[in-house]
Length: 116
Image 1 (cartoon, rainbow, N blue to C red):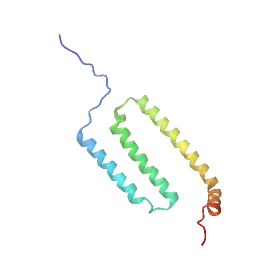
Image 2: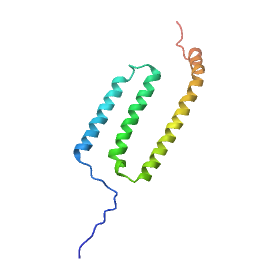
Image 3: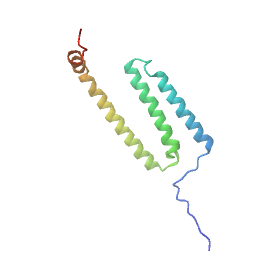
Image 4: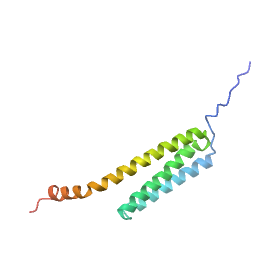
């Protein structure tokens, strides 16, 4: 009596070289993020930081989560969820600009250190 194992397509074996290369890329992008922190104008820094974080997330999703070899429907659902998160962040960041002047006024009025 022989045991028969069916391949259900749930696992994809990745060569160690690919995984180590992706890991090296993640480390390099992390070092780049730290190196650029505080060295760019504030409005550019946010865009650069989010772009680098998105690239790192894409590497993790494609290779460590094996999405590169997954079914197209799963990839489509994941892309739609990322688009929703991007849309949510865009509207949240647009809304924060309206209140910056009020926050600055509050800081000037209430958080100034006491004068001697």
